[in-house]
Amino acid sequence: MIELHIKLLCESNTARNRKRVLEELKNYGRYPGSCLEMCKTHNVKEAWAFLEEIKGESEGIMRAIKIKFEIFEEYFTKCVKKNKDKPSHNQYNKLKAKLADTVRVVKTHFSTNDSLWFQLLEDLLKIDDYI
Image (cartoon, rainbow, N blue to C red; front, side, top):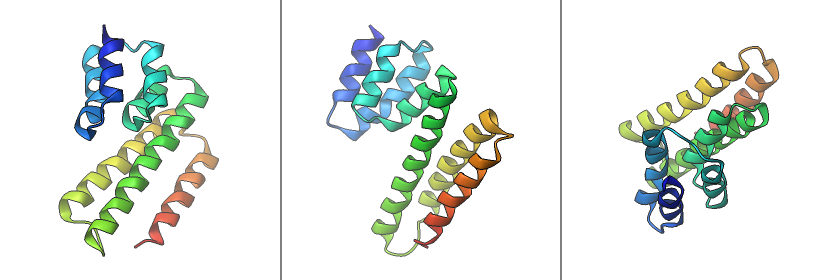
């Protein structure tokens, strides 16, 4: 039943429904493999990253980190375009939370992997060019 519910949310044309996918998965507490494929196919990034991390495989965790950083970059770019200079206080707090979530995944799964930290720093410096 959860698969059908997730499928309908993923296929929805409204951003509000697509954002509910992650919430619904967390509430359900079980994560059938088909849900990962649906999120991936429909590019529901927040839920896709969550499921990749939950799976716990190193490649999936790396994908989760990449996706989470893409989410951060997309939101940052949207904020800059919308405000023409710098994010509002509310947008800044959302950006901070999205970045903190990305760093949490890195710290949780790769605390001794220096190259991953350097990659994260490199990506942050790219964003710094926007500011």
